[in-house]
Image (tube, rainbow, N blue to C red; front, side):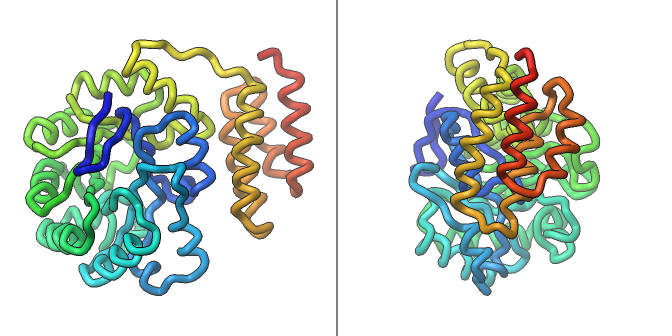
Length: 324
């Protein structure tokens, strides 16, 4: 089903979550090849954009193939949001700018008053949203958790809408709950029932059946998939096919997983220096091999490899011995 955020047309109801350390351009292009309707980048600090080093520039890099794409930013003061938003829109030209008000990680965001810490200060959150909306000429969206230590999702969602946000994503766990309990989809439903802007539901989407169940229960406009896509980009196409056509998923063969990893690896090798290359390759290889027969042992061996040739040989021999 087609829908829109502001003037941005989106072909289906599947959105990639902005996972830190995961959603680089290589990963996003793999997910886009599965038909993902809207891609979100990993979050970038507004302060980091102001001091712009090579690492930050690399994180901000995007390709036209990934469009429509939303660049996610996080911070704790209006001035840095204004400066970062201006730079990103003038130089990177994303289709949407997304404000993170949900990151629960103390070291990354919360310690500085960013991420989910903003859920404790609705006025400050409103000021930030208004500042970004007034600064850029593309749609601005907001991603929230259900609250800091108790649910205030509807209050924050209404504030986001009143402040000019064009859509909101709701992850229905508080900051203190992290990922330790099942996502409470009734919170998404409550927000959707009371807002006029699009609402994206996020939390516990591991299969295409979960995706449909969330939309049916909450009436949300789209679903956002995070951890469920790690090593499993096929879930994107499976969700699209099931939501749009009722097509049920087929099992993914081990050789197909290896072939996809090789494709992903080639994109990683085009974008990373030797310093971080093997870390990226080993991490993604472990994700792709997860749940295959003997995957616990092969994972240990994956993280013992020191060259890409050694890694590829290990995986080739492993998959060759599997029956499926």
